Picture 1 (cartoon, one colour):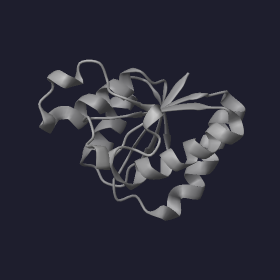
Picture 2 (cartoon, rainbow, N blue to C red; picture 1 turned 60 degrees about the horizontal axis):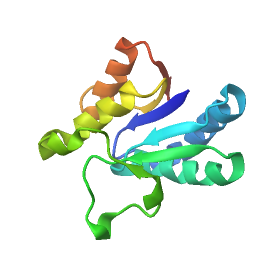
Picture 3 (tube, rainbow, N blue to C red; picture 1 turned 120 degrees about the horizontal axis):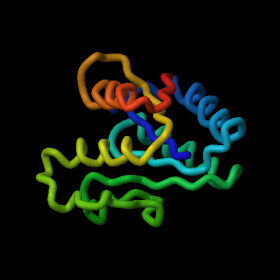
Length: 139
């Protein structure tokens, strides 16, 4: 089983302990060992930092799923963990994040979300996950 994340780019740092608790439960109680995470915004940054930690302590695997081929100065520090979704090179840049998010959703079983507004990408993909009958865990 694979888990992915959708949350607001301005998610407050105060939710990180809740995110940690949810991830530990998924890893320790449900045996989740594979995670996909984006590369935009604070929610992704918090999730990535926890995944880096849990890779060391729990042996999980994670991939940072990029929407764009990054410039050298913007390359994630864990570059060996990055992937580009197949076909994204044909997508116009303005649709790349949506394409990447759809790819992550299609390739995941569980979605962890932090959604506080009814508009924007996080809300849209949370709703899509629910319609696709994915397991959705809300922070």
